[in-house]
Image 1 (cartoon, helix red, strand yellow):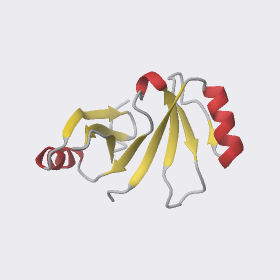
Image 2 (image 1 turned 30 degrees about the vertical axis):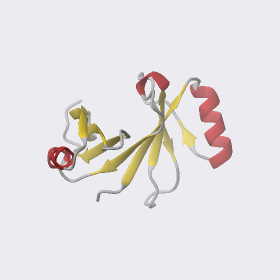
Image 3 (image 1 turned 90 degrees about the vertical axis):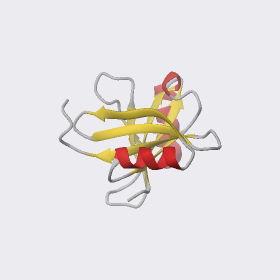
Image 4 (image 1 turned 60 degrees about the vertical axis):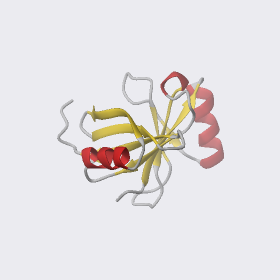
Length: 122
């Protein structure tokens, strides 16, 4: 655990961005339901690489956001506070997938955490 498992790339034009990443890296990009979010498959499972998504720039104005998987989101957020980081978003549900939160490290960088939990209600 505690490895990078997901990333989000902010975009302005999903068609242009999807075509670019498909052409350059052969990643498969598709919209996730009715929400403005486009998951990308970056390789064959089970691989050691992280999966990613395209997200509206307004949802990630600071640039690419990296997510680290943790076993216990609340404990990880407390460790971040104890180590001098700042929690930006507390435990937030991802229906059917788990929980996420975001934080700033002492240098001001924004990162995310993910805890798997398929029982999170949709």
